[in-house]
Image 1 (tube, rainbow, N blue to C red):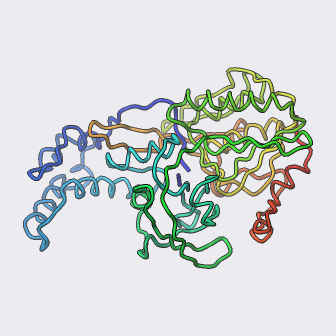
Image 2 (cartoon, helix red, strand yellow):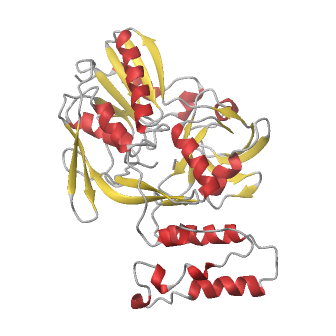
Image 3 (tube, one colour):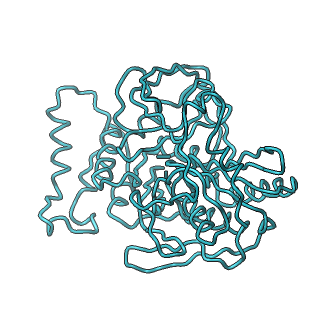
Length: 403
């Protein structure tokens, strides 16, 4: 689910996969034999009982004997790599072909694209869900809601989230049909027109009586510095409202840059406060503290969360809850306590790979079984929401915020 946490640095993998990507040529005469040899793979396969020539043999058999002759070498090649990555069984480790990679960066940065205005992810049952319906988009106008399960695209069953992302995007003004298991338990087809979408990362609303609501849609932009500038600008606008209480709405926020969560925490926590720790594969621990002190340190604060609040959004929420700086309202969060690095390859493909666990200031590791639990639990009511009543937001307005 869109649900991925990034560090600010982007590096190049030294793992075996780099041997598959460097120097790749996708022409009709492409042969993998020069890449899939014992000498090209950094972790010896034969010592693990694996025949390093098997891939090349299967490739050749397909090209020699497959009945349908119109083979797409590029699709076969990237499909093989994608299968290797999927075999890890980690829903947060993903491979993107060059064409998918450009769409991926658009999704995390909010760049303009033609689509319907939803962020996708997975629920704990492995279903592809709508993590977030973005405001003022075709998806919102059509009636899609956060938590809806996507079952079909144009009448066909969905097999892969990457394929779905690619299919949903298209030329502005064209239509698509999504088959949805709604949050009410009913199946319904939605015909939706694609439109150009540009998504800002924050939306500010003055709710009256001194209460300002800030919806933080994601902790990512084209770059970390752009997100930080956007967030700082938003907080300046909030400060100018002279609020008596701030509600930070992180429902449906899938996360983003790890460092963005640390940066945002500085607006509300004293400088030098521990926000999170990262634990690497070898067991090393790195601490991340706030490096500045914002101007909203003493404004009462409430944070809204739900089952789609994940990753960086959980880091931010968990830190403020730990220091009793915010009252957390809503439902248990998603429980994503892993961090991913992004590895770029020379042909434009990229790999999003789980490389670290992150820990709250208490040392607690967030998991689906051990998520952030709100101080005040309020279930989302679809029936009330259809009447225009957001029961969770109403409770956040009623609750006295923490300082």
